[in-house]
Length: 561
Image (tube, rainbow, N blue to C red; front, side):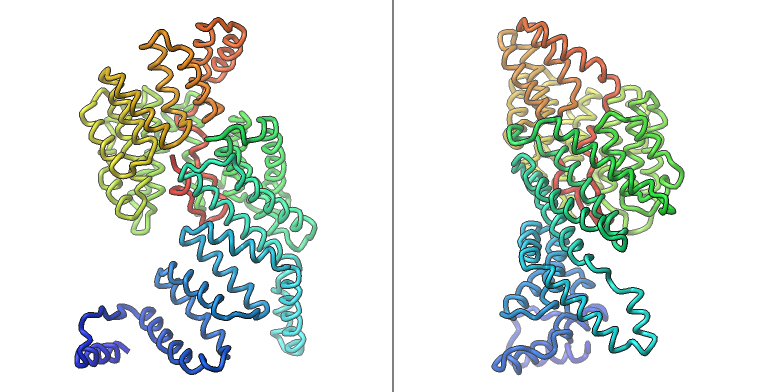
């Protein structure tokens, strides 16, 4: 076929068509894609005056070829155009195409579009669609019942009710990705999107639990339900706390999610532990101040070396938890070992995972002063290659975050000239990244330029309302440098606590300011709460560990701050 393509190019040149760029296939899958497109174009010209094509299966075979060639946007547009052009309901095939379109939108980072498609699926009486699907399968079984295929179809056929659960989980995933994208763009709405996703996951969980044949889907539904609750707890209160339910409701929701996950994780019929369920349960444990239980769960045999997408996050969380239990060296060595393993792997290493590990290691070194000297003697370099690779791959937010983390590291090491370079790079990579502006504020504060520092902290809070690190840093500058503005520092500390309810450093600072404002009782209560937990603060907030629900989950660039 390559010769025919070359002949077509020569024919175009002979006719004078020289200003167009011709597509030349570079591998067999691209040749197959081009041949199918040519065939479909010829068929379209023949069928157009008559109406519906009689070769729907051939038309849909274009989708896997587009996916194989990594043309996700083309899949979205093709499915959308094909559905709009059909103009009529084609039975269960319509629902199949809609489901493929929703999955393609999710893969192409178009969660809003995926939500609209999945809501259309839910609103089209999917019970009737499932009944039609089951009828088609039963008819096929009856036709082949005398042969061996009929028996195989009976064994592997989809149980009744599975279609509804699949659609609900698809809608849940689409809504959750939309929530994450809104958080990345700092469009806070009190966690409404996460609450809607939780409702769909809960409905799927109840449907799956009512049928013993849907045990595998029940496990997926429970993980989706727990993940949605964690998302609501993590980001729901930020930006607009007035829209969020009281803390008691969140604690009750976490308790329910813990019960459901425990039942799934330690099921007697299960031969192995699901790593994603274990990771979600450990995040719930640390949210409920059950650090020892989380350490024991993550240290279980069989969870240290899995092929799961959450392996790196489980080990990183365990390293951070070791540091809160005064085992800093062990945690730091775990991070070094994981980084070595990632760097020695062959092609296909995830840039996002390398970013996450380097970021945790930098926070580890900054937070635990004893590890800073060890870190500086390590083989971390300046991460310029990783920052450049992230920027070139389109993850400019992650590149900006890593550059800002390096700025903070060098600022704490009193290397302000080098820190300033990284802060400027971070702001250039992503001008609306709040941590980039915050890191520049830390540099100004380190060289006693308090006015400029406050200005950069305000820029960070303008980019992301009530950004906790900048709110706390501003409060401390106002407290120590401007004696007459303790009331303003108090308000900023309260904003920092709205961002992170477990920021015990902000609790202690607010307690001091309450004492200066002669609110003695409130000061004693805040100091008692802060002193109780200040020694167990993690080097990186638990809210920055991504909530992974599916093996192909992509959450880093959706809600990274």
